Length: 123
Image 1 (cartoon, rainbow, N blue to C red):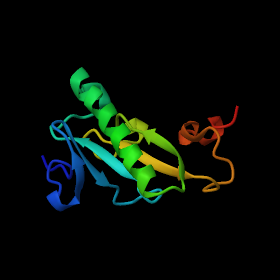
Image 2 (cartoon, rainbow, N blue to C red):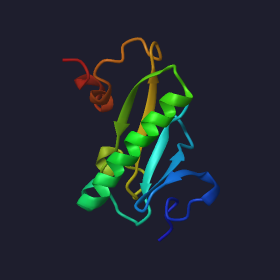
Image 3 (cartoon, rainbow, N blue to C red):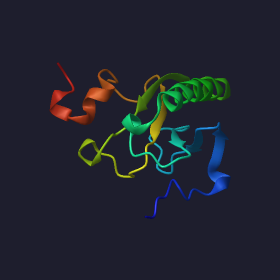
Image 4 (tube, one colour):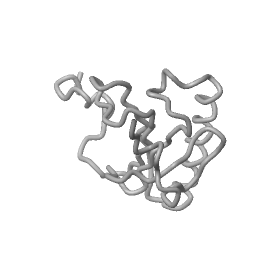
């Protein structure tokens, strides 16, 4: 099995802990868009242990703080993951997106995560 995240170039890693490493997304939605990837090959969030999920939360919080310290235009974040091919997962190794947002980066940012099914976005 060939997995791009299991074979990541070490020079791309910007942070890590015992369970996860962090890289900047190769196709960023916004500047600073980061991916949090478990060192061990796990398919989705649901395959992570409770200890790994807790560690992920701590690393997300750390990176959020670092991003905002480095760029004061960041006013919000989207955190997202696709679990399974039918949910849009294209790399079958768990990864979580942290996407910095800035005021005015889109006309109407409300209901962002609901946009996965466009006609369901507004309610």
